[in-house]
Length: 325
Figure 1 (spheres, rainbow, N blue to C red):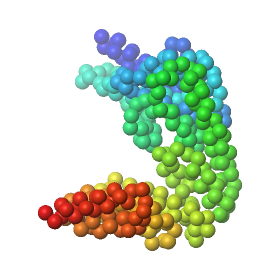
Figure 2: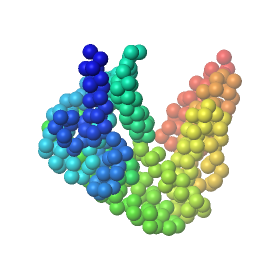
Figure 3: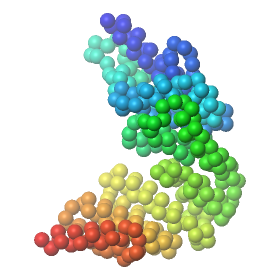
Figure 4: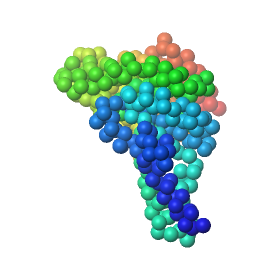
């Protein structure tokens, strides 16, 4: 039994590092190493089709893989433009990292190798804020997300899925052309180029542009472009998140308040930051109710005609009522 278990663990480690199609067939159209995928994308001048799954618990990934993703038509067509990557987080993958007390050295080595693979894949999932399975992202060579393909039960054939992916062709072309433009541009022209890329990306993943966003206030400190405030807000959120990770709520509120004084933000951007500050203070308990109300009022006053102003006013009334009790 020990020998069989050792063989199984070894095969799991080898297969997961090489291919998600078939260990025996030798096909490598799908790979499970994101770093390797990035290298291939650069070498082959392709984008990345990134498929996150939990095959033995999400209920749909296995069917998608076997009926669509592994079919020759899909691989040939989508594989022309994309490096195909599958990162699976099945329970069985986690179980392969566990070892018995009486495990052999071979079993320990296989489990350690699988653990290393899983940790790498987990880091990728964290970077792309994956919260559910399956998740399918379309990335540029630089890792920017310009498209997401949500699960659709009516899409059941390779042809249908190919058509769905093709709807992002124009955006993919724009993103890939924009990167070298940004790299060669200077000054205000670089700001415009960065902003064009920013607006083309999926809003939920624009935080991946932080390396470019941080350059905008430096390139355009006087806000001649009219977009500097947008990036000051993004940087404020990034700094606030870092502070929250370190358990520093006051530091997070200070990070959010910092860009308000620059004069580069519009009223709704100010409202958004004030409201978030109020939320952070609410996390610290009833001792900070006065601060919550103060920043909620500032949020409302910043843009009383905005879409969320009514909700903010209701929140103020709720907090005021609770404070009076």
